[in-house]
Image (cartoon, rainbow, N blue to C red; front, top):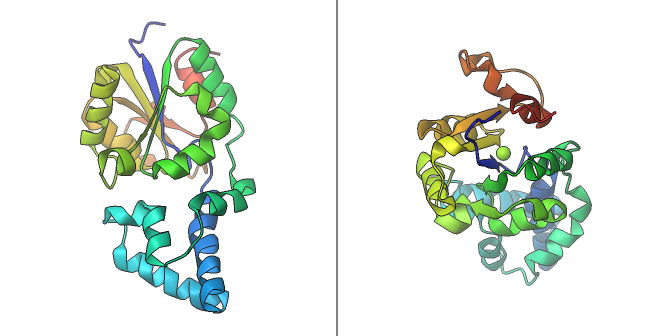
Length: 221
Ligand SMILES: [Mg+2]
């Protein structure tokens, strides 16, 4: 099938890997380190840290930056150490590697497009990094809070492809589905829980529950 597609792009959290690792780092690792430093109970430290997260909020770019938070809380621990502590929590979804392998062998260029900071992406995708030619972080690379249509346009420019030559898949309805579609990218909305969203409005063929369905759609099975 000649679909004119050259690039397959993927979100990270909830798409390639589960959310557990990031949650452990932010909601266990950092409060624990803060508790140890100030001889507080975990609960007190958690409350304080959580309040500070909320004060900055996800609409400020610092919120995504682990170095900022370690500095702010004056914690003398390298983020790499925190990451190592929770390495066992990194869970790449079971079908991911085999799907990437098929796409790669079929000659497609594979890229990652995430809101997460580069440090988080790199650490979590290590075992499958070899399949990707580019890893784009909206926050670290473009200083954007979320993957906007402008983000996707910049990525197409860097890859030197038209939006019509790109397929993007992710689990956020706005950042992974509506925004890439605005510029003509073929987007698939991934709903791993299958509590299907009927509101895709006649776009049901673009609603998938795991990545194997991409292979079906592009006749690679
Ligand atoms: Mg996601």
